[in-house]
Length: 210
Image (tube, rainbow, N blue to C red; front, side, top):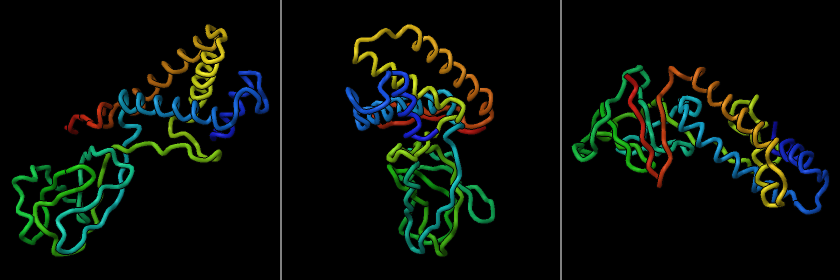
């Protein structure tokens, strides 16, 4: 279900099929807020859902490399093209004035720091936690389990009804039941993936893969 379809269902539940008290832009703001909160709560409860791999290529003579733009700064592991895993170290112990084959890395903000300057352009595979893409267009689809897209609908309706002063009991109960079901589904399906990431003041914590 994309953002346009979500908004149409919200309009159905608030009994406003066309723009009147609520403009499309206003509803989009409420949809975005609900999606953001659900995604971050899902990341907190079952981080494996927002865990993926991507490839990045180093530059000869440069000991730093930008993280993927959707990475939240928590990197589980990095392997080179031969499958060898780089070890996680402390950048303060690195000598980035020398050249060689990187075997250690550290993360500083949005940057990977190698222990030495690479002598060849190496393609690395990086496993990391990512930030779900925002819903910028009506055709954009939320990055939560498809069968639970209705949560964004119900959450947005609740916010709209709170603003309008309407009764919330029936839809609030339904929302809570579906939300609990989504978290149980995610926990069961991704129980073998990385453990968790928590949100707070721009800092993210995680547990290492054993």
